[in-house]
Image (cartoon, rainbow, N blue to C red; front, side, top):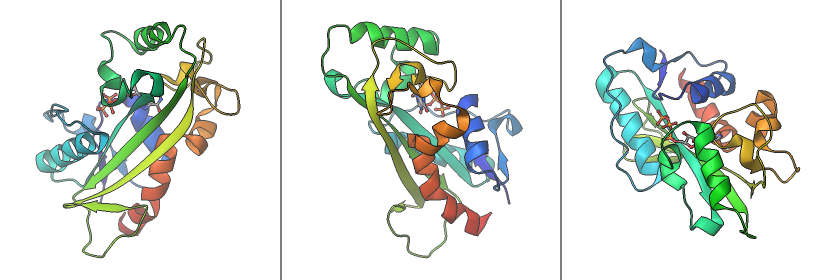
Length: 201
Ligand code: ITT
């Protein structure tokens, strides 16, 4: 049995291939007629469930989806669920716009979070924290806390990684892929999901 990762973001797919190295993953390239649903939810969990449900409904393959983003204290939680759509353009356009919006802000606290939703691979057995059952789905959530840096640094990762400063003093984009997986929001959410997946796949 295979597990579909319902994402159009190739960076996320690469991270999942690293995180779930023993699970037979497939991407949306196997389903050219797949239509990504609109992310109409107001929370990361709602959007992860929308994407995972769409994957399973359209393909019949057990599906894992990720909804994630950057939550900035001084911006009342923005860009949050709208991280991918914060401004038009590239990842760089978005992180430069965010740096600009943060000029003069003394409170630089921020976190990344990922919600993972798994649909179509449920068992009837009860699940315990940190796994959560939401309807037919299994859900996990991970976090990494840090700050918005004053300037961008690093070339690894994607999205807002160049401007996210970790408590160690490094920006996320300065970490190797392995180091990022050990400390990141996606690494934590995947770590919670992994034992459950290993029992099925
Ligand atoms: P899919 O919906 O197809 O999975 P997406 O990129 O649109 O791809 P989201 O709606 O979950 O995914 O938006 C997440 C955005 O948050 C993403 O585009 C990045 O800008 C940012 N983001 C998420 N995880 C990140 C990470 O590990 N490092 C840096 N930025 C991240």
